[in-house]
Length: 117
Image 1 (cartoon, helix red, strand yellow):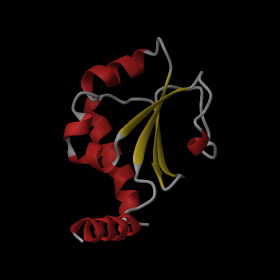
Image 2 (cartoon, rainbow, N blue to C red; image 1 turned 180 degrees about the horizontal axis):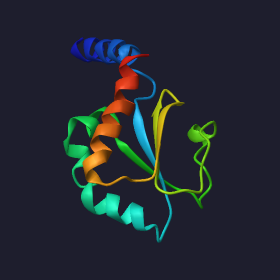
Image 3 (cartoon, rainbow, N blue to C red; image 1 turned 60 degrees about the vertical axis):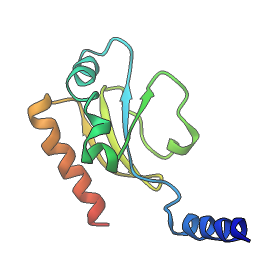
């Protein structure tokens, strides 16, 4: 009987969870100087902080085929480009990496748009 209750609870919890969580898609390409700077200055901290927990980083090489779930997100040739995506829709976009001093404030502005939905 316990396994039946556990299965029922798991099912109910799955209904309340969003189908797709927010994520920060980073469009990048090999040899990108600013991508390298981002990788050195920001990427190591990203999964450890609130912003990274709210929108985990997902990397997409602009030269590879676009993942099917991002088909409606326009890809630019300028890298890095950061696109905040929630439930398959673009919420906000940041073109380029402005350095660590400005990046966090801009990301906070992007994430604030999630709360406005």
